[in-house]
Image 1 (cartoon, helix red, strand yellow):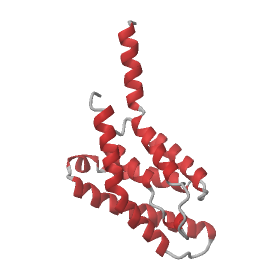
Image 2 (image 1 turned 90 degrees about the horizontal axis):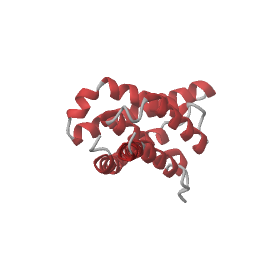
Image 3 (image 1 turned 120 degrees about the vertical axis):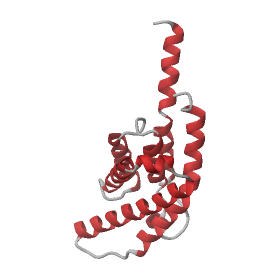
Image 4 (image 1 turned 90 degrees about the vertical axis):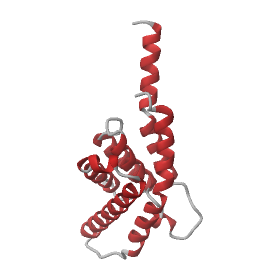
Length: 172
């Protein structure tokens, strides 16, 4: 293999980690302490939006097993119930892949509306799992507020992912 071939492969591999790298950054941003009472319960799930974006545009670079691993990492860093975020990320990935043809052709408003529905679905599934496992009915208001804040954060996350997509993955 020539030096150009090796460097080309190295460049290509480096570019292909962009979706993983930004998703990891969003996971870490999600655990940055914010001095607001109760923020942890309602903080937007930025990484959820990142998984959604990449499942639409480059599912080959963020496959389900990697979404699951990122979910586990999210659970470990946030202190949430083990597996809860992982289930949410897998749910997003599965729903998006089943509707990818429609979502990839839609405009930004369609993508955003679909994300709102998926974020609410993930929030409600997570809520029901936590209630069922703990055998208690918890207040649903923080869960709904988190879904709203996650949906509101989607344009920011999508813009960052789009810039990375254009900068690093256009040549792919």
